[in-house]
Amino acid sequence: MEPSERARPVPVPAGVPRVDAYGFERPADFDYAAYEDFFSVYLGVLARRAIKWAKLLQGGGRLQRSLTVKRYIRKGVPLELRARVWLGVSGAQAQMEQNPGYYHRLLQGARNNTLEEAIRIDMNRTFPDNIRFQSSAEPCLQKNLFNVLSAYGHHDPQVGYCQGMNFVAGYLILITKNEEEAFWLLDALVGRILPDYYSPAMLGLKTDQEVLGALVKTKLPAVAALMDRHGVSWTLLVSRWLICLFVDVLPVETVLRIWDCLFNEGSKILFRVALTLIKENQAFLLEASSVPDVCERFRQITKGNFVTECHSFMQKIFSEPGSLPTRTIARLRDSCRAQLLAQG
Image 1 (spheres, helix red, strand yellow):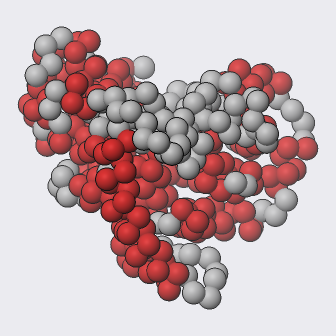
Image 2: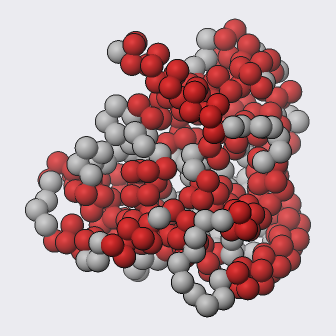
């Protein structure tokens, strides 16, 4: 598929909003016709899933991990239940209940001015295309975002704040509509699900970039050979995929479906997504003739109908990459981390 086929401008149909359900302004090349075709079918899927989830969650109580919950999450979580599901399966709900008032005490405690200045600098850079984060919005979510990031930086001073966390926390606020819940979900991600992704050395992030490279070498050797031939590092191509957890890389609804599984199954999901994107577009990538061409083609594969149609995309991530045992990931992480540490 040629790049021109991936992002063909389509006129905005009469009556169709330029802003999506989450407050994001749709880009000029947004394919409204293809999206409407997809969403008319996807609405039926969501309706069926909502009925099943309602039965599963009868009686209230905290959601626990189970094979049934895993199967339900992979098939899709209704938007109105997403915060509850994320909080339950990630352990964030338990942490919040065990530490009542902790979040608010963080906001009222001593301040780290250097930390807060770094956060303030990024406020206007966070989702400039989202009407709810614009400084003119009423209410403006920048204040909520600042509070969550500041509280986290004071909660875990070894991590503090780094760019990328603002996009992750922003999505958490959009879904939970609650600062305290967003804080505990951020704690689940940064502290347990993605350790060392956001620490100053970013060793976890660097390790997983190398792990992805090793997986591509095993599963998609022609793509790995292309990278070697042009001397392109995985850091150049996928660091944003991983540090932002595909935020501002893939369409919103697709990112949220990925996060449903991320909170329940852990970071291995990120490898499944990356491998699926690369495998599905392998022929297109192999046509690259230079380093800039490789980079542009990696940018192009995160756009178009394949990634917009989130339901079929999520089915693909559990079939396309094939087997991905946890022990294999652990072994690769140990090896890649050791190599990185040896390099200093």
